Structure formats: C-alpha cells, structure tokens
Length: 384
Image 1 (cartoon, rainbow, N blue to C red):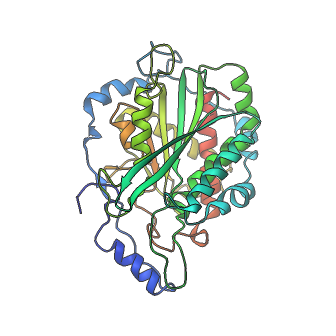
Image 2 (image 1 turned 90 degrees about the vertical axis):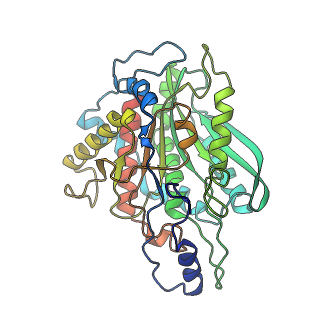
Image 3 (image 1 turned 120 degrees about the horizontal axis):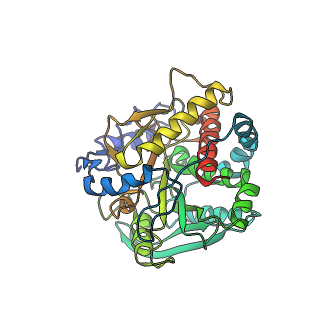
C-alpha cells in the first residue's frame, strides 16, 4: 500500500469484503479512513493557492478571460430559504432517483451502462433543456481494456463560467458473496448522484429562468465513470474518468480565449454521502471562503428549523481538516489549477467498501438536510 493515496486499501479492506461475503449477517469492522494524501500544502499547492485565493474576493465582477472568476454570492432571505427548500422532495429523491441506482455498476458492467442511461434520460427530461454529452473512451485496466463514459451536462453552454457539481456513478468491483449479494455503493456514490438529480429537478424553473436571462455563469454537472480502482489504488488504476475528462477539457476551447477547464469557477465534488452523523472539513485554503459559506448556511437553516433530526452540537460542516486532503475525482482538476470544494465525509462511513453500503444503512434525515444545504448554496452562488 502506498501511504497517502485515497483508496489504496488499508490492510484488511479485502478482508472486510471477504468477511462480509462469508458471513453476511456479521457487522463489518469499522473501515480505516480512505487513505489521506497530505500534500505539502493543501500547501503543496502554495503557488496555485495564491492565484486561486482570488476566488474568495467577492467583487461580483468577472476577471479577464484565462484568469479565475472573482465571484460574489447572494444571500437569500428567510422567506426565500423556506420557499426554496420546500421545493425539494425527499420521496422523489429516494424512490425516483436513488433506488434505481442501487445496483452493481462497476465500470464496464451492464448495471453501469443502465445507470448512465438513467442519468442521461432524467437530465434530458427537465424543462431547462440541458446539453448532455458523453465523454466516452477506452482504457487499459487490471481487468483488460474497459469502456468508460463520463456524463457532462451543461445548463447554458454559451455562458462564460461554470459552477461544477460532480460525483462518480460507478461502484467498486467486488466479487458477489455466496448468497449472490453485490456491492451497490449507496454512499459511494449513489446518494451523491441522486442528490444532484434532485437538486436540478427541484430548481428546474429557477435554472431555466437564469438560462433565459443569459447569465455569465451557469451550472455544469459531471458524473464520472471509473473513479474506483479495479484492484489496488494507484495513479493508473483509479480516477479513469476524471483523468480523461480533465485532459480533454484542458485542451478544448470554450470561448473568449479560455478552455473548458479554465471556465470552471468552482468545482464542488460530492462523495460518501448518506451515512448518519457525517462531518465535512475544508481541505483547501483557496476555497475556504466557500466552505465557510456552507457552514453559515447550515447554522442559519438550523435556526430556522429547516433541518430535521439535526443537532447544533454536531454540525456537518466543521472547518479545517485534521486529516489532510483525500485523493478523489477532483485531483486531476486540482493539479491543473481548478479551485476545488471537496465535500466528502471524513472519517469515512463505517460501511465504506463493504457489502453493507446499502439503502438500509442510509440516514434519510441526513440526505434530506444535505440536499437542502446544497440547494441553498447553489441558488446563492448562481443568483437564482
């Protein structure tokens, strides 16, 4: 195991999966944290950090093409917060979006293809008329050559800047147990996918309006394929989709002299969501202002009584990370200078990379609360 990688499995990960397969009734051992990369500076990024810190200067004006966007959020009133969050429907999120994705969907599998088709169909059905594209490619893996496809959905392709919300839709490959149970990755990452679909459904009319107003900044959704390693996490066996898309966007012109990669004003990555009592930490100095905004939104929504089964003493968003940064789909983008807000539960859910990462072990109030917090963040960032 190479110390410091996100998913190079801690000793015993294979053992946990095997144990779960042998005795499905047994509770899995608490997983060791998904390996943490302590880059010299969320800090090994010092030079980039200085440049990216511009993202925190909320002047409301766009910078010259080729530089980072200097962006200011709006603040919703209490009545606007209540109205906005009332549009989210946990039942729809759960039944319509989440449950169809709770299947074995490792890259190259029939379930992976069906999940991708499901995501595409749902996005195309929205009134906001998203541009939905596939970034399809083949790559060599420890299991041979595998076909991958990222889903790239852009609300308004003519907008200069993109707020990106991203997650991965593949599940990790594990052999089925003796009872035929498959790994479905509920927190990893079916719930993040379902949350993104629910957000754009609930905010469909608002997103259509901002598109018609030709705002300079728009929403882009990225659903990555091939995040998981087939065997041992390494530079070549992991992040297949993210690595490919970052390279593609880095060389593809957008407009006004910038590439698609340079058009990303903020890259928000969701992962390992849905377990009870999660904690999220700020991993990067350059986007600390946006993380603090999430902290503020959560506290305000708690005061307004808009979060269920939520404790003021155990807030989700808790400040700087004691764990360092975690390697995930954001990494290829971060290395190319994209400002990243990484929303991953740390420490990881106890069911991480076990056959117990199922619907039964999800916490509905947590999923509902996170959806509402993210909806407010999105609406304030895009001035909906």
